[in-house]
Amino acid sequence: MKIFDVPLTWFEKFASKWESDGVKFSVYTFVAILIGGLFELIPPFFLSRTVVPIETVKPFTPLELAGRDIYQKEGCNNCHTQMIRPFKWEVDRFDPQKAYGPDGYSKAGEHQYEHPFLWGSKRTGPDLAHESQIQPSADWQKRHLINPRETSPGSIMPAYPWLFEEDAVIDAKKLQNHIEGLMVLGVPYTKSDVDSVPLSVSGKTEGDALVAYLLRLGKDSAELAKAIK
Ligand code: HEC
Image (cartoon, rainbow, N blue to C red; front, side, top):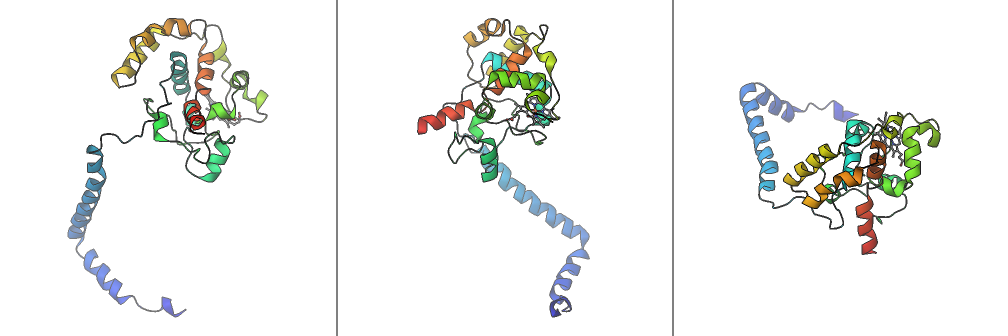
């Protein structure tokens, strides 16, 4: 092919001009990147909010919040994401019941009360953003956590049987502190939520809390989908 033999004279001239003056070239690129950065950084300062709130999304109950702490403590987010990307195959897989219509991908508003968010970046296991729609049985969730091989033959997920043992109790005082901390960050909990903690976690194991949390994932946005239909 002829095209490869044609000397790119105009490009050679252009490149050698810039390459022969490295300092100038570096300064110009630095300035260009800086301007690009400013275009990205400045607009958000003038937006009153960047997340569109979803009305049906409510803060986690104390028990679910305790479960979320276990999820973080056990590092479940190292193997599971909680963010369905806006691609058909993702929505088909992680929202099989089509509870959300064609818009089954994750929205920022679903995570408005999460500090920190647990989107994750590694999928050794499936996405859990809408787990409550995929596996709504508390009994299944419990059996799976105690021994993943029992419900899912060949699973490589670790077993977490100790979470359901008698001494895996939830520290109510710590949970109350956590809720008060979230209130400071603007999560709309009230004093009565804080007071209700000891009662709502009494007699529950860490595993019960984790199951409650898993069964909450995606529930609020499903309510919204139903309301719209
Ligand atoms: C080493 C990676 C790994 C870790 C850590 C892990 N999982 Fe999994 N998880 C998997 C894999 C792989 C599957 C798919 C097979 C199965 O169902 O067991 C899975 C499946 C699941 C499912 C079923 C999802 C579905 O819709 O079928 C749930 C729920 C789940 N994991 C929750 C958890 C929780 C909660 C934790 C932390 C206590 C956790 N996982 C920790 C790898 C992991």
